[in-house]
Image (cartoon, rainbow, N blue to C red; front, side):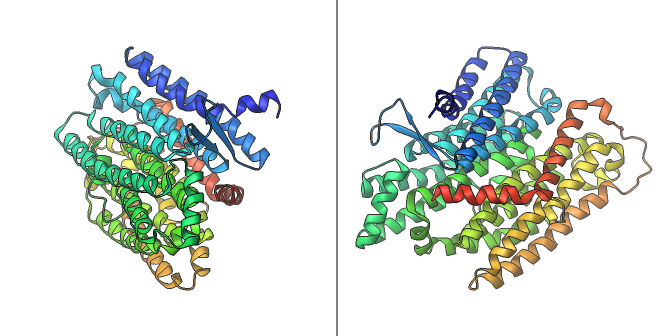
Length: 501
């Protein structure tokens, strides 16, 4: 390879290190410098991730980056393919938009002396997400899972009130339970295979399966790791921590937690399925059937909980339970088409959920700060940018054509038709969930566009906060692009999964 190509291959490592060093350096500066450094690091990471993404697409294959030039089994490795680089680029863009969209509220929601700490936690959060995307080592993945957990707790409780502290404690307890199970699974895999690198573990597991040895401990290991990651990604019925964590944190924290944090754990699950256990072995273990059942229940009960909510942010939070169920439904199908649909829904949900949380804060600001539905009446007229953006996000969640959510549900339906055993329950629950989505999202859209003759509320325009309006515009455009130009993205996902395997 040329020198230029070899230099591009270093970018994933640079991205992780930039975020970690930025988090350390930002702790020594005040809020303004920390914010500028945070935006600069995110911008640099977007450029680096875009360069590596173009490189991997043109190369048509993944490559392994050896940390410190020490080969396996002593060295650590990063594995970089189309899926990893594509999601890294997408995650960086969404985090930048989420931070910019909620920046105007940060000064009100966080004490002055702690605003710099917020950006420190954001940098560490991004470094952990990138490491989970790129790492080829299971124990390294566990280390960054813990960094992710600590950063997420900090982002929740940095807004000092009783509800956020309670939510952070609940999140920490559930996350530690999930992390502990994941670590136990890693220890059992190391005992069975003698390796921590994903590719080496997969080879040893293939030998064990061919010989028919160690089947019970391997099954227990797969189950333990699956449950651990299911807890951390809020799969039903392990979602009790989610509504308060998303509902009472700062608006940027809610957008980041709902769209990115859980998706980092879900992508780690994808890596374990393909890169560690092996897709066929995972399917034969029947664990997919348990995940499938939990997913279908989550799609229904998450939506029912959202319908009962009278708080718009908690409603959006409960919606995430249903959407995580969609992703695990794709995993539970046990087919390649189901995994393609699951990966696309990860992208769709990341773009839409951040949009909804950022738009919702604009609606509550012109409703006296209240998040109750009765107070939101007419808020779509008082803040037209937020009202239009929330409507787009709602239409996407329901699955209206031209938006990203429609493509997700179309892909799930197509995958279901190819699976004769699970087709009927998938299509039934998919239909029920779509109807329930329409009930609570369209109810909210109708509410915010119901005229009200009350002059007590303030009215804002896009000129009052141009950055906020620009962020909403970017989210809307992104959602429409995912809905209209979906085929190239689906093709890249299919190519990425082939590289994965």
